[in-house]
Image 1: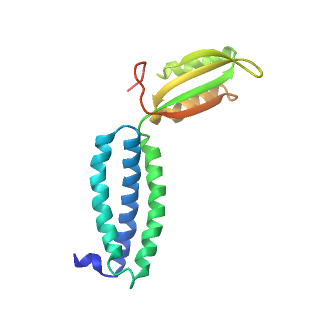
Image 2: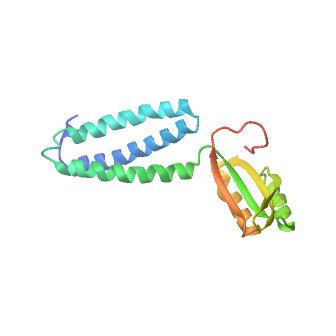
Image 3: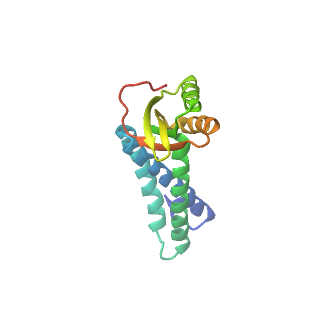
Length: 177
């Protein structure tokens, strides 16, 4: 592959965009494995490793004579981390749990009804805080629906405390497909 051994603008572009793609793929692979999707993550690892070999091999070939390859490689690595995390956020793999803490009032009951009308399963319990009684709501949802749930909560009760946590496994209950 003589193409990968030169010093043209095309080599630099190959290194830059190839490294961004490789690091973004790596980020997605890690997220999938962390969320229990081991087979998908392992399959993506094949693509990641092929990209890594070609890109890194291109940089290592004559890098002492062309330090610009190394600089582009390092910058693309940083950009790739940003792109990978952005992509993961947009793809929103997996599940999460949302806890909502609000003062006990008719508004909290209305909020639970509105969430349920939007196909969110809501479990409520009573709690006691520093300033009195509270309604605590639990939702277990797909991560893709976080913004929708949070928007409904903020619109209906702006003083709500909202906590979102990643969940690896949710078994049973109502989880809309």
